[in-house]
Structure formats: structure tokens, C-alpha cells
Image 1 (cartoon, rainbow, N blue to C red):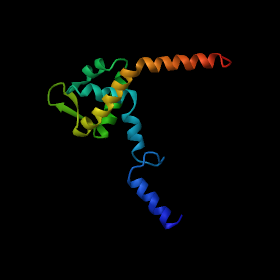
Image 2 (image 1 turned 90 degrees about the vertical axis):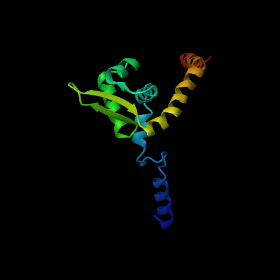
Image 3 (image 1 turned 30 degrees about the vertical axis):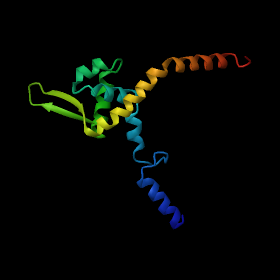
Amino acid sequence: MTETAQVATAARLLAHDTFDNKCALRPIMDQTTSRWATLIISALIAGPHRFAQLHQRVGGISQKMLSQNLRALARSGLVARDVAPTNPPQVTYSLTELGVGLAGPLTELIQWFGRHGEQLLTAQEHYDRQQASPDA
């Protein structure tokens, strides 16, 4: 590898080129843009939630999946886990400043789906019909 190519590779990696398969941010991006993480972050925009509140708010998520996602979001610095010194301990989850910054774009994405839901469903139906009868 030439020195110029090495410099270009280093610059790309330092700039967190998410198109590069070695980008360290890819796993974080994958996790935070998953269905569950997106919904958890969007639910926390309204303010802090206890685990049971989040479980109820994010329909269809299992307790195990909620726990795994909250742990990953906390590890990425997007969600804060606050434990009150009570018996039993009361745990509350809230968005960090970094999480609030991500919540806006994620909420816009969810709203986009809401605005274009009918078009998306119609497009899927049209595609499925074409696949069922390719001669048509």
C-alpha cells in the first residue's frame, strides 16, 4: 500500500466513514436504528420512564429485548439509567443530551413513515401482485 493510500485510509477511518465495513460506528448505528431502539428513544422524548412504563409504551417488545436495548443505548451514551436508593431500587431511564440530539431525527423518520404509510403499503401490494404473476 502506498503512503498516499495509507493516509487516505486513515483519514476515512478517522472520519468514521460508515460505508467502510471496518467503521467502529457501524455496530452502534445498527443498534440505535433498530426498530426497538428507535421506538424506545422516541418514547423517552416525553421524559423519564420506569422499565414497566417503557414496556407498556413500546407495544410488542419483550422484557428481555427491552432490557437488552436499554443496556446497549446506555452503553452508547444515549440513555441514562438512574437508580433511586429505595427498597427495592427504582430504576428510571431518560435520554442523555446525546440521546436528545438523536431523538429529533429518529422522530422525524417515524413521522415520515406515518405520512407515507399508505403509499408504502400500496407499493408493496403492487410489487407482490407483480411477483405473483410476472407475465402481467
